[in-house]
Image (cartoon, rainbow, N blue to C red):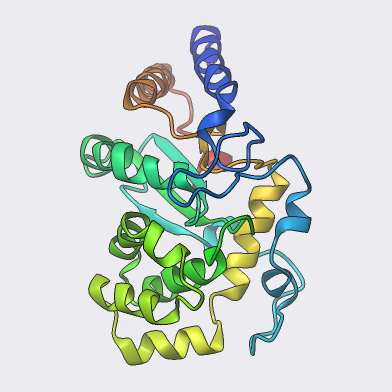
Length: 262
């Protein structure tokens, strides 16, 4: 990275990092706008993680001893040749994640991802702080097994207030999966077997390893950004990243770092 690009990118990122009240679980003291639940304090993420995800619980699938590689988890969209790689960690129960995906992400999808400028990877991150968050993650991953993750993600965030308040969300989540395009029988089998459990576990461990303490958290070509930030900030970051990539290309340097790829 050039000195100018590094300075600009760091300034943007750390300005955003200071605004942790826009992230669930950041300790900012704001409640979840979708459910009225507290976002939680600064305790250990490992302690807040549901034990069924970390240890397997009653699942029929034996979780792997090691974390799955980042390339084997999450859901990618956009061109793999894009110069900008975004890695997102979000919790389906988080109100700020919902705000980001309903208010900001559609513009990013249209202007940057669909046009080949950005490759985006969404990694399911279950913080354990939100009602039915683990069930929603399982539902999303099972819909994703059938190729319907993107519409399921949108539906989960749109109907977040509804499924979070249910004592048993299984029926509501299945209905959303079917609405997203999933086959009900295959979806039920996936949920019953908890097939995505290793991926969900690895998503949490990957986020914890890089220091995720609030959702949504992003890495943009390796640069951290936390919270439901406005589209203007995203545009500034992408402009700086594209300028840096163009400068590298003009100088005959390598492309984006493999470490930054989703």
